[in-house]
Image (cartoon, rainbow, N blue to C red):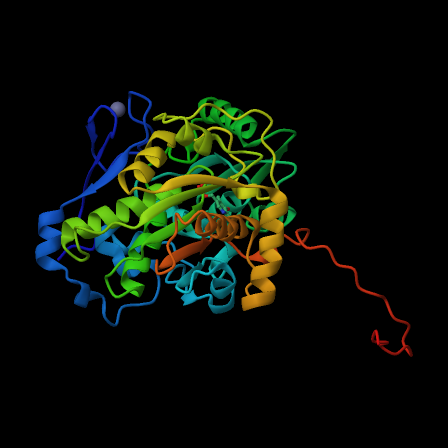
Length: 406
Ligand SMILES: *Cc1c(COP(=O)(O)O)cnc(C)c1O
Ligand SMILES: [Zn+2]
């Protein structure tokens, strides 16, 4: 019995294969690489029942993860986040079976910890000592903190407008942080140059193959939490799209293992903000890749990605699952954020709020049916974004009384 059944890396574009022992980045053809597992052996040796009694974090799926030696696991207890019914919000949207998987309840307060835990563990395993990455904030925070535990040096570049708490997380973790007067794409260019100049490992989204393996555990968990059945629809706030690609990969692997039925795949929905919707545009135009979005802007910072390296994989995942791509305005998502908090008590992040708003829109269009089981990913904690809610509270003198309107 192996800790991991990882086999090799392969290119989804040109089919070239690579060993997992190296410090792998992109394929020679420029495409992201994906991880393959020895599925026959895994199927033989591991069953859903094998998971019973294991720790409630993402490492319970270690056979389907790329880290080969348990000693290299870097962890803060991430994963196995709660999945629960959003009763009043669901009633309000006329989706009685509306669920939220709450990634706000994870170390560092965003699902980026999943990618960081697995990505940093594997980087440590193959001997990476220094890495660099551009980020919209949450990924940089998560990678900085996991790198601190791993003893890996991290160089992080993020837009000056990224959520302020994320730069403090990087700094507290001892990472080397730069802010750029620009967007994540500009940060990416600066990182690419630093990677060349100083021979750093490039941990940019999809430029290393293992972040997606961490994020795929959201898909594994959803299946396990639904007792190895799958919901009808999964809505995911999509920036670089790693989460969505990962969830799709997870569900395909579970089908191959026979842990879920082969004839039902949830319809995957890529949710974007109207101010940055390259995937939605490409989807509506029937394209297989997306054009860079000009003047990208949204309060949902995690999905402010003008050009995703994995755009073709996102579009393929939604096409194969009969899903769709949809955008919502900042105004709509902020309104939804308040609705969800006041109805069900969940203070979601703006990206998660966008996914709830999209569910409402798709129900109104009858694309989501009344009896569909629908899962919204809340990708982070609302408290990481203190400026999304406007507060108009009176300040009282010490001896004042509360005066209620008659
Ligand atoms: C990064 C991020 C996203 C987008 O995730 P991708 O997998 O890159 O598409 C969504 N929400 C939050 C809170 C994020 O930090
Ligand atoms: Zn290739």
